[in-house]
Amino acid sequence: MSEIKKFLYVNRKAPYGTIYALESLEVVLIGAAFDQDVSLAFLDDGVFQLTRGQDTGALGVKNFSPTFRALGDYDVTKLFVERESLDERGLSEADLQEIMYEDEDDGWAEKPSIRIVSRAEMADLMADQDVVLSF
Amino acid sequence: MKFGVVISEGPYTHQAADTAYHFVRAALAKGHEVPRVFFYHDGVNVSTRLSVPPQDERHIQKNWTALAKEHGIDLVVCIAAAQRRGLLDENEAGRQGKDADNIAEGFRISGLGQLIEMGIQTDRLVTFGD
Amino acid sequence: MSTLHTVNKSPFTNTGLQSCLDHCKDGDAVLMIEDGVYGALAETVMAERVAGRIGAVSLYVLLPDAAARGLAEKRMLNGIAGVDYEGFVDLVADHDRTLAWL
Image (cartoon, rainbow over all chains, first blue to last red; front, side):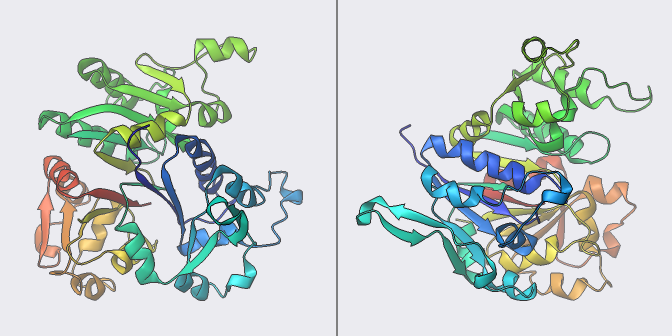
C-alpha cells in the first residue's frame, strides 16, 4: 500500500448495552492489517469500554475488554482517552486497564498505549485525520 | 470526488439508510463517484431480499439494489455482522449448513477489510448511523 | 483544513450535539440531520449554547429533515443555514473529513 492515511476510530458508547463497542474493536483488529496510521479515541461513554474489572459471566456474553490489551500486538498503540469524559463520570486513569505495547523503535521497551488527553487535545486529534470512523 | 459511505443501522427503525440513499443520489447527480457503500452493525439488515413493506411505503432494499445497478455501486455487507444477524448468501448458507439464503441482488457479503479499503481509496468517508 | 460534523440526535435526549460543539474547531461546519435538526430551534435550553458557536463555526440544518418534522425556518436560530441533500454533498466535498456524532 503506497499511501498511508490517518484513521481515527471514535468510541463514544459504553460496552454491552449495545454492540457498537465490540464491533468497533473488530474493525480495529481487521484494519490493523492495512498498515495505516491508526488512533483510537475514547470519549463520552466510550471511556467505560476501558475500565478494569469487567465481568460478563452472568450475562452469558463475551467479555471483550481483555482484547484491548492485545492491540499492541497488532501495532495499534495509540489509545487517546479524554480526561474531561473521565472526570464527568467519576473515573480516573487508575480505573482503566493497563494497556502496554512494546516499542520496536526503542529497544522493545514497554510503554503505555493509553494517553490521557484534554478535550482540546482530543479536538486537535480529530482535526488531524484523513478518515474518521464513528461507533 | 470519490465518496465512501457507511450505513450502520437497520432499515425502517432508523433513518440512516434513507438519509444515506438521498445523500448518495445527490452525490451522483452532482457528478461525484460513489464506488462502494458498506453495511455494518444492524445496517446489514438492509440487504435482506425477504423484506415486504406495505405497498405505499418505500422499499429500502429495492431502492438500493436499483441505485447500485444503475450506477455500478458495490454494496458490501460485513460478513461477521451479517452472520450474527442471520443474513447469508448462497455460498455462506451452504458452508454453514443452512437451508436458505436471503441476500438481495446487488449486495455482496465480504469482510471488514472492504471498509478499510474504502477509507483508503476514497476522498471522503461519510457514516450514517445512530 | 477543516471538518464537517454531522449530528443526528435530538440534543434533549443525547449529548451528541453538546459533545460536537465542545470538539469542533473554528472554521469547522456542523450539519444537523435527522432528529439532530431539533438542535437548530430557537428558545430551547440548548439554544444559547448553539448560538454561542455561530460565527466561529458554520451551522447548517438539513431542510428535508426539518420539513418532515414541521420545523419552520422562522423557529430556528438566526445564523443557521438550511441545505438540501445536494448542499449536504457540497459540505462533505468542501471539508477535509466528515465526523459523525452517532
